[in-house]
Length: 264
Image 1 (cartoon, rainbow, N blue to C red):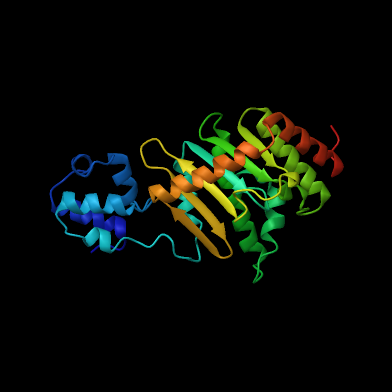
Image 2 (cartoon, rainbow, N blue to C red; image 1 turned 90 degrees about the vertical axis):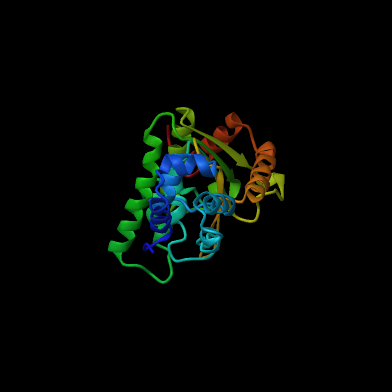
């Protein structure tokens, strides 16, 4: 048996004398999706695992030993980070702080400096570099398409000081005005909304089913159950329909940046 689920799948496939393409056709999946699973970049959904078992004649082995994606683990974001790199569309909802891919270096450093237990300066630097590496997906002018839905609390909470907030908000304004991202604000005046439970990321791919990622205290969950993803997409769409339009959202961001001390 291989050292992880992907290795195990590859061994079963090779033992059956199948190429990735042949297995993909038999299991009604794409070759790319199978390649991602074998490389450890994705964990198959339960339905995918059932189809792989059927195609390989392995009973319910691949289904039974499917890694538990909904467990809280120390590196809970790692699976979502890998998916983020493959997505063609990312829709973020932030309840209390700026989403990682939109953070400036100084904002990221302020967020990461408040961890408990405290981390060393070297560790913090490493975390900041990782976060800035994630933001490089925005270097491509087109892919992925990124939408950010921000609760007004994200903009009102002063992280790192007023100067850091002014810089962070203007960074988002620049990304939005350049057409690279869409930003919508859910104002306090709206009251309760459908995403008050916490942060949410929705990701879509060229050749794989969509997934959702939600995060809370010491826990991150990658959801790939079609019914769960559909529910979370519905919640996102409902909140988005109540948000300020792009133009009004950017006007709010600019006004807040000015309050924080930014000067055009």
